[in-house]
Length: 299
Ligand code: ASP
Image 1 (tube, rainbow, N blue to C red):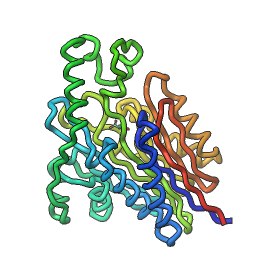
Image 2 (image 1 turned 180 degrees about the vertical axis):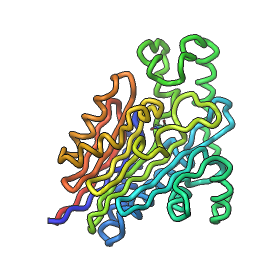
Image 3 (image 1 turned 90 degrees about the vertical axis):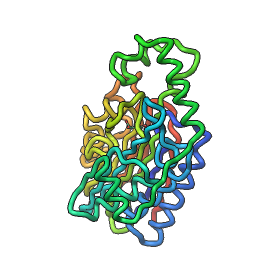
Image 4 (image 1 turned 60 degrees about the vertical axis):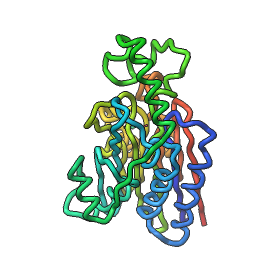
């Protein structure tokens, strides 16, 4: 029996109402898989669609850094047939994941900052600067919170410290962007792929890079499956979360169980979500709400 599957997500903490975006993105990916296209093509198109949605914190919906002006994005794509490309802190492009895919077809695997931007221009990506009203509002709220309760928020940027003591009326999830996007898939040939894209998380300095473009942290794909993670990048990268979950898939753990085990490596105060696919099936788990969609076909 052959199995193809795809999982998409809209970020740890993304509201259920945004599920339609994940479903549309999984639908287009599944269409490609059923047309005999590769898992790589499927996750690429799925994540590009999520980047174009505008609600998610990636591509067109990316959040501002602390200055309220700077947008820097990370994205990556990897497949079990050896393709790997990532961009970190890229600016002025609409679809970072498409640039990451171009990097996968260059002599390198990761390009950062201005180098990534110039590479994108060379490969024909035009200038694009999103003007997202809600990102402005969210940044204004963040600034207000900072000015009122400075001391509480400056001990490390991560949610790790202040979530436990959060005492504002506004939920922290409304202030700190977490709605990164990702997709994992298995195609008819048995190849796995993962793609991820984000505008970052939390209160970010210029040049900050999270887990998203780091192999083994935000994503991983190999002969036994594909994994993508979301949540606080500073925490995810310390555990190499994607590779840990992948190793459980390789040992035969079911995807949903492997995702749950991965999430349980973190304190409940750290929002985390994981999606995964193996030759057994596809699944996801999060310790906070997470818009996601799973599509599987067996024949
Ligand atoms: N992991 C991403 C980052 O830290 C954010 C997210 O997944 O929401 O940049």
